[in-house]
Image (cartoon, rainbow, N blue to C red; front, side, top):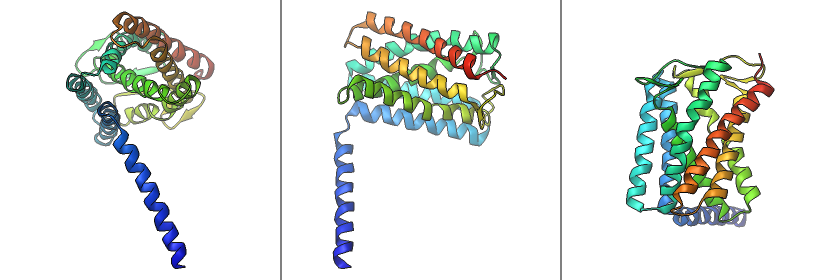
Amino acid sequence: MGMKYAGKSLGRSAMAGKIMKRLHALTAEDRLVISSMVLTMGGVILGAWLAEPRTFGITALAVISLLLGGWRVTQSRRLAWLLLFGLITGVLELWADWLHVVYFRSLVYTDDFGFRLLASPSYMPIGWWLTVVQFGYVGLRLLERWPPWMAVGLVSVLGMVLPPWYEEFAAPARAWHYMPSRLMLSHVPVWVIGAYGGCMFTIATMAWVFYRPQAWGRAVLGGIFTGAGLMFWGAFWFAWLGNR
């Protein structure tokens, strides 16, 4: 029995050692982006708990400020490129929102956070700006270790798992909700989950294709293609699964 318990103890120690080794291997950029993702999810959960829609806008502003401040401190060329890439995408995402709010009438915003931009709350471009930076960064880091198909595939899967929680908590936070669809998972239509997978596929792919340090024209062009991709995937998945 003593040998058995000793073996378990050694196994746990080895696992703890591996975890600590991986944590120490994280760069300042890694910690910044991970912290921004944790803060984003925490703000969304808090908004749902308090039934306070303004929490979504405050969280978006706080997280993008964290990323901008982190870039100033680290002077990271990769973050600088991703921030421009994400800004272009975030602005263009307004037209994807407009399509669903005005044309498809599948999405209803119930709080504008002060004012509207086209059909979206004022913070929505910032929300997508930080999302593109976060998932674009994850994609670029994975591409350092894995082949492109594997890195892009994992980011796409993560996109179907993590960001849809923002949508789930948006309804109890009274920030926005979707019209009922044929297939629903709680407050989230299945077409939205598929659209997120496509959006993250586009973000990771465009980051892989266009990223070059300090190549600002490529960041702008990549952001334009990514913005178009967000509109395409939202329309595609709604047309396939969104009919009521």
